[in-house]
Each structure stands twice: as C-alpha cells, then as structure tokens.
Image (tube, rainbow, N blue to C red; front, side, top):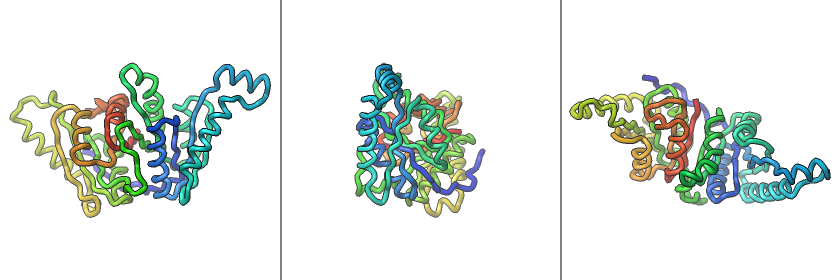
Length: 295
C-alpha cells in the first residue's frame, strides 16, 4: 500500500480564477480570493473566449476592437475589481482560445499555481455543453484545481473556508498524491481530516466477509496518515459500502465537510466510477468545493 510521503509546501505563486461570469463562477471567485490571500499569491482573473465570425471580420478588416472583445474586457475588469480589495490584488487576463488549453497554459506560465473555477453542471442534455469546459480543464491541468459546484453555499467574509476536510481514497498511488495535499491544507487552515474508503458491493464475494474487509480497510486508513500529521489534523477513518458518488456526497452532508480532496486518473475503484466524468458528478452534487489532483 502506498504511504504518504513529505507533504508539499503551499507556496503558491499564483491563483488562476477562471470565470464564465455565472453565479457559480462568482462564488468560485470568492474562494480564489481567499486562497490567494492565505497564500500571499497573485490572483489572475481570467476568461477564455473564441472570436465570433462577425467580431473577427471587424478586427481583421477594420483593424479595431470588436464589440465582443470590448464587452468581455469590461466584464473581466469589473470582476477583478470586485475581488481585488486589499490584501488581494486581482489582475484581469483575457485569453483568446480553447479554455482546455489556454487556462492550464496560463497556470503553467505563472507556476506554482492553483486553478479555481465554478461550474453549474446542468442536466444530462445540458451538461454536454455546460460541464464539458470544466471537465476538460480538470483533465488537462497538472496543477491542483479547486472547483465550486452549484450546491456550494456562498462564501461569506466571516466564514473560515476549511474546517473539516474529506479525503476519499482507494489506496492507489494517485490517491496518495492527493492525500499529500489534503494534509497540507489541513495544516495550513487548521482543519480536521476525515479519510473515507468506499467498498463497492460487487467486490464483496460473501456477506460474512464484510466485517473482515472493513476491519482491514480501517487498519489501512489508520496507517495511511503519519503520526506527525495525526497531531494536528485529528484524522477520523470511515469505511462505507455502496457507490462512491452516493457515499461520498452522503458523508459530506452528514459530517459538514468543507473541502473534498480527490485524485483524478484514468482508472480506479472509486474510479471515479471516476474518470473525470464520475468525479465531475461528485463536484456538481457536492455541497462543498472539490480539490482535484491529477496524476
């Protein structure tokens, strides 16, 4: 079983807040500003767009700023101004191109970074358009990404952002990489940690083996968190049986979790039932932000 190694310092140089100007994005902006504040990091407020044909003709033919670019520039500047009160300075960065590439590219340019974005998810038909941008960014970035879904309450100035963190694991190397960030956030924010493993019913060959499996996983979860971390994050371990999505969301609600930490990879038994679409379902339904670590 992989063990947690040395945790990284939360020495972010830049927080990249990607907005589409929706209410969910605005809530994500509050989290981005708070993260930049705690990390003494620069806050880049960005939006990626593609020029419409008519706007392109104006800019190429008339060699002047199109209405589309002018409108987006003003919207972005206004959003940055709302978030840029001391001690955080927010810098608007309008990007032209596919957000799947240009937003992670911006984070790469200003590394070490964190990307913060909101998503409103949408229904099964809508999600193909609405959710796809967020999913693609989560898939393509090598930096930690904090996503704020539609079920997350607005962040108030008085609310301390992360008091209890949930780390959901299936004991793979990718999950362990995410655990390192869970421990780092717990120490930086003075948070407590819940560690959850979900056993799928299909892997239980005989019902009478469930107790043995749970005992084994409880021991593994206890061993996953090093003794030095136990002194500051007071870890609580949990083993649940069922679907990863339902059990994780249920745990978040039942334990008043403020941040969920997940590792994203191509295969897994939480697997994101999870490949990012499964993880994205959790992000959309979770009543707290989700920090994803891609490996």
